Image 1: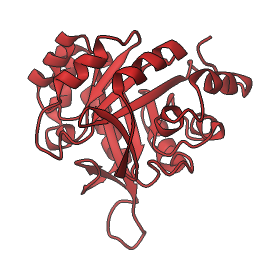
Image 2: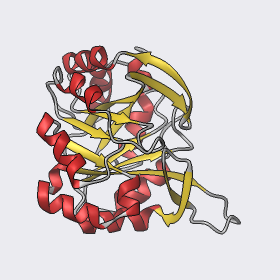
Image 3: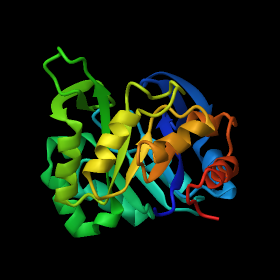
Length: 256
């Protein structure tokens, strides 16, 4: 097993880090620059910045928000939200962003994944997949891809989509369970494991972390290559060093 990455996430709305439950009821958490500096000091492996309302509001990523964070971050930095074209990606890379994450745009135009991987390199391209569980009698996939901040179903099976984007050239997958998001009741291990076992690229588990055990379960049971969390880090319940120490003691390889 490769070293597991510990990744805090900045969900940004109106220039502030926010956190909600199941993608709604958002509450102010902190300033993104202050948060980024703190996570860099604590030794996070990577930082993810999501402009969470860009797609819903039919606009591009707010580059001024990204730049403020990019100017202070000292670890690999990934950005998502409102990225819908090669030009959008280039603008972020030119600013110093290390990776871009595309979600709705990939579903709308799968060939964008292929073009981006060829132009910028698959190691710089993350495909974010948001998913929900459906009841057996819904007529929909058990694990369904949702888009536009979880507001729209697609009828696409998550495992099928994960395999497809891997084939198109995605370097990694950021998988978020809408049902688990912000609940602090644990990652959706069924969803995480299903995707992680179906593809050969790294899968980051996202949505639902509430305690240290959840981070371990995402790796040991869900087979995730990285764990992403927001609330537990933003509100000081768990620090990056505490998470790293806990996983190491549980036998999970992490960076020293």
